[in-house]
Amino acid sequence: MKLIKISLITICLAIGLASCKNDDNGGFETVPIRDRDEQQMADKDSIVAYLDSHYYNSSVFDGSNPNVSSKDLIITELQVGESIPEGHRLLAKDTIMKKVNYADTDYEIWYIDLNPKTNDPEPSPTFADNILVTYEGFTLDSNIFDSAVSPTNFDLTALVAGWRKVLPEFKIAENFIENEDGTVEYTNHGVGIMFVPSGLAYFSNATGSISAYEPINFKFDLFQKYENDHDNDNVPSYKEDWNTKDGEFTLNSSLDVHDGDDRDGDGTPDYFDSDDDGDGVPTILEDMNEDGDPTNDYGDGKSAENGDLPRYLDPEETDSYKDKK
Image (tube, rainbow, N blue to C red; front, side, top):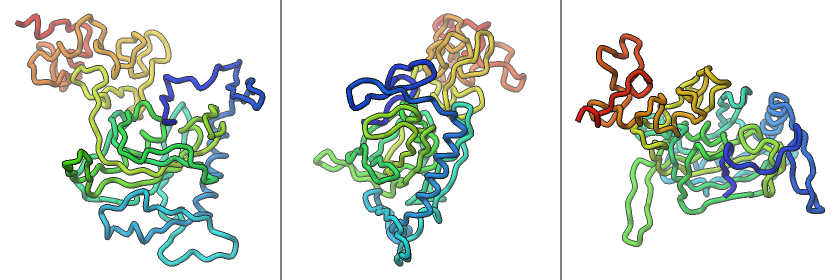
């Protein structure tokens, strides 16, 4: 799969302020690192031009069939002098643009909800959850570079950033049936397509058939979500996004500056740190009332109303329920 970990996997060695890729002779060709703001503007022009020049079979997604799939989506380039056929619409007519900030850069990312469920009570994934999806990735020139035809489980924190910016806008299936042969049928699941600028994809890292600085697209089916607790401390991972609630886990900018998602400054973001306040007591043991939720457990005389930190974030509170017993 090419939905790789953006923070843990290096595509190629950096050389100065450049990334690199294989050339035709088996060596390395340097790719200058571009300014993210300037590249975002170039990607925006490319994506908007694509949305303005391609149409899709919108009548298939008119809401009458709750079991539509991304496999039903057909995108066609509008030829010069051609009229858009009945039952079709330009992608630009239905695309939603979402503004996000990533790597200190303001980005725009585009998506279409092909099975909108406005009042559906089913939940959406958070940026830190696992998702069960099928998908197809393709470039603006219609090159398919990756796909999963069977439902596949992914951790959103391990995918290119575009996924965790868009998938929280979609609902999971309202129901599912497990068949005797082991297959599962989902009813009224999320269906969408996203158009991702390179800065929320692979940016300067060419990979496979994807060039450096190339916008990419994904059409997908969202079936299920699973709440993640990466460090098994009974605090859901999405709740450990402290700094600006930006849907990203970041380290502090320097020692003794707590401007990231590492409350004790030990170099590990809290969602992956089993001792969030660095007091030597695992977070899970600082749930003194043993209700399974450390976030609402404060030290004696302390409370959220007083502006105090819960016990698991307060290094001065080192008691654990094991000590109580």
